[in-house]
Length: 477
Ligand code: NAD
Image 1 (cartoon, protein in one colour):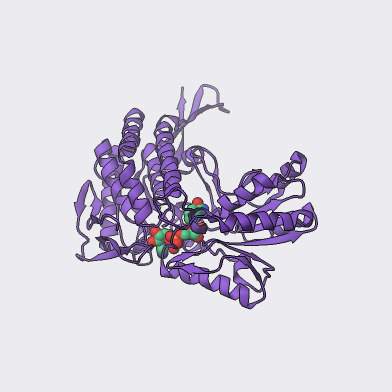
Image 2: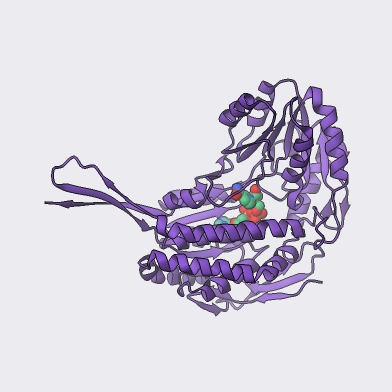
């Protein structure tokens, strides 16, 4: 039984404060649907209070010295190191992360927080050649102001850090709306940032239901930018709101990422990568390689190895390092996973392995014979379900890999570097990995997606562009 967390208040203007309506809601553990914590049920008035606090703080925080922001974020990283067990506990109990996934997420978030501290000194302008004699022409970077950060349930620490530490490093103030399914980490971050010295009002958290209060946040006239990670459906809605309000926006959305395995691939590397790429965190990862295209001459060999390895994956205690698959987050998500598997079987797909449930956990599931008539062919399942297809050539593999509205990540296994580079150049995905799975991330890389997978890029370099305004200044004599 998990320790009960309790954060029944919102973090606004450097204080814990109850939701205006006095309401709370319960967050359920995915493992047994028992209450994990009770949190404040923020409403539109609370969003307005949080934005007002962030706006009030924006002037002084925007003028804070880079060395101070660097120091605050370095101290936050230090505190995150000291509180590893608390953060790991929330990742395991609140969202059902197996230990290995929680360790991966914690380690990534720590790197991201450290990397964010280094951004503070990097928001540089430049001296520009001028068309006028006697003119010194230059650009400087200014923070954009109040940034609304909205995070999904599946990586609340990675995204909770990246979508808040990066804007804070650049002198912006932040209002964080975490997923209603994973709000605890956001409150733990509020404590961390506050103790690290980040001034009151620079970071605020409103918990509540995104569908109730999200629009009030993203359309608020004092919010200059929205940085969102979540589903393509909500992302498209936010993009329309931001366009109407002439706001900056970065969107990191869903995916249906392909992996290609060519005949000359090292199957000893491709199979473990395919497993890691789709079954990590029971398939609830945006980059998950849920479509695998294998050249026909090695299709049977690949499928036999992949299926055998899949059947050995641990589904035991979440705190065991052997466990790979835990519970699916909520009934809403479980229903979709069940529907995709059942419909594929009804319409003639072959269930190679998996398909059964143990409580709220779905066995790792491999399908072949998936066709356009099945939802799992094109839609994001966001569960441990993968379709494997034979292809007759590299050209067919490339065509199939690109036949999707998504464009997040792709992967190819081959020993032919020329082919691999051709694939990397012509893959419609925004990120491509040669001889590694599609599931990769680092703090400073241009992370993001094309098409239905998003707009804009995240990462320390990309966020300096996205989260600061360039201003042109001249001195004339
Ligand atoms: P979701 O879209 O249901 O919710 C994401 C967030 O949006 C939550 O905080 C929710 O409260 C909020 N929200 C809901 N309605 C809103 C509105 N009208 N305005 C503003 N905010 C609103 O997504 P989810 O189920 O939490 O997460 C899973 C999805 O996220 C998957 O599609 C996955 O691929 C995607 N994802 C993408 C990345 C990436 O980097 N590309 C990373 C992680 C997850």
